[in-house]
Amino acid sequence: MVNRNLQQIAADLQENQQLQLAQHEVQEAHFHLQEENQELLEAEQLLQLEIHHVLQAQEQVKKEHQDIQQAQQKLQEAKTAANALQNKPLQ
Image (tube, rainbow, N blue to C red; front, top):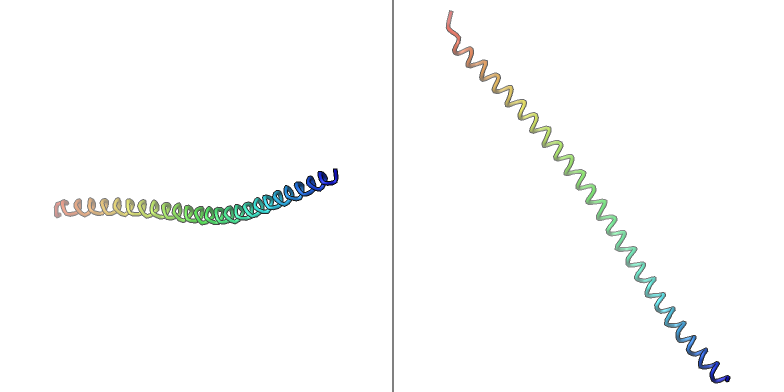
C-alpha cells in the first residue's frame, strides 16, 4: 500500500513537472505572439501613414491637373482673341 502511494506520488510529480514545462512553453509562445502582434501593429501604422501620404499626393496631382486645364483654357481664349484681332480689318 505504501509502495503504491509512493508510486502515485512519483507519477503525480512527474505529471506536474510536465505540466509546468508545458505551461512555460505556452507562456513563451504567448510572449512571442505579443511581440509579433506589436510588430504588426507598428507596420500597420506605417502603412496607414503611407496611404495618407499617397492620398495627399493624389489630391495635389488632381489640383495641379485642374490648374493646368484652367491655364490651357485661358491660353486658348488668348489665342482666340489674338486671332480675332489679326483678322479684324484695318480702319
